[in-house]
Length: 416
Ligand code: AMP
Ligand code: GLY
Image (tube, rainbow, N blue to C red; front, side, top):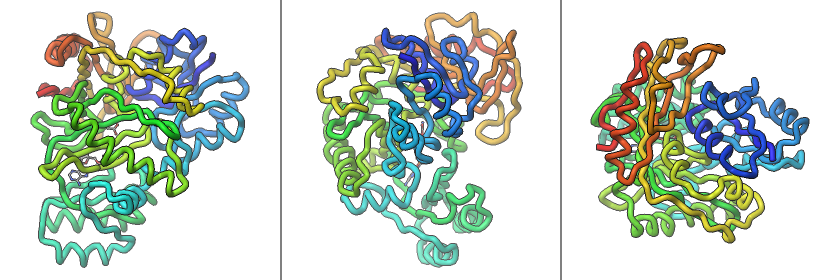
């Protein structure tokens, strides 16, 4: 079978790496991919949101399975377009992907189906939001743009002055475009975070092994939010009781709610959960694999990933026994200097050939035919597998030291 993976990050390199291991995979393409995917797949010059271009390519090249990494094409209906054309594609359709595409939709779903989450109000008028905040004296508070904002649409606000700037930038200056037409203002939750990812078809949910993402740029969870600076699997706070609780009180009622709303979900449901003193509460839904969680979860998967995706497309996930390795995994992200704000591109990366015992998943990298250069904020994710997280971390950090590029930035406290 010919397989097409859509996207260009570390997550997509991990997907390509895992899918290519399947005996069912004869040839694999990645659009647009990076220097890492180019070593396994044929990279294609389509942007990940060029749905018409991708569809044309998939038809002309008899692609048997398309797998979509990022949320934007899912929210924009890539699954609908491929299915209408009779092509097999893995992921939620646009009606279901709204779970990530609109924070207002997801908060209303959480409220309607009594799923634990932060208390909130929604505002489509900046003045009304200002009035509400005048009466609300409790900081920090969280402001979220309604639509997709490349992971930047969530502001943790600690003073009234910051709140004013946040409302103006999102709703009036529209720094996130139409995503700022409406906002959610919600209660600030405290506690450790958990990323819970599940394989989902129309009837069945199979939770993946747990992971913990390190979102802030600085050690000790300080500084700006990023896409994720590293991850470990399993999450040390996760056990069977917590999994059962989250399945019963969060995942299953969410999926039942989507069925009730005539938006049945299938694909990957990734729930960001805060483990508060009052129990687990939903921070957000994502309708895709996490990045960098995928770089620690997929290396632990023993079952053929094509079999899983096909079972979900055909609604027979209940017949599949999804197996995981006992070993733990850790990944360390190497980012460009300045990330998550502005950063240079085109810096030469050296030392990749000296890596031993880890898999290096590429994110923002480009190959000019001779050398590999940086081309994004998150550049590489160095994943290792070992019987315990601490050992996996040590191998990844040892290899992280061998790789150099100007401005190389990493968090030294992943796993702690
Ligand atoms: P999201 O884009 O919704 O995943 O939010 C990004 C990050 O913002 C989350 O992973 C949390 O770290 C943080 N966050 C979101 N909502 C809240 C909240 N209500 N309280 C505290 N932190 C939050
Ligand atoms: N690691 C966070 C995300 O993928 O959204």
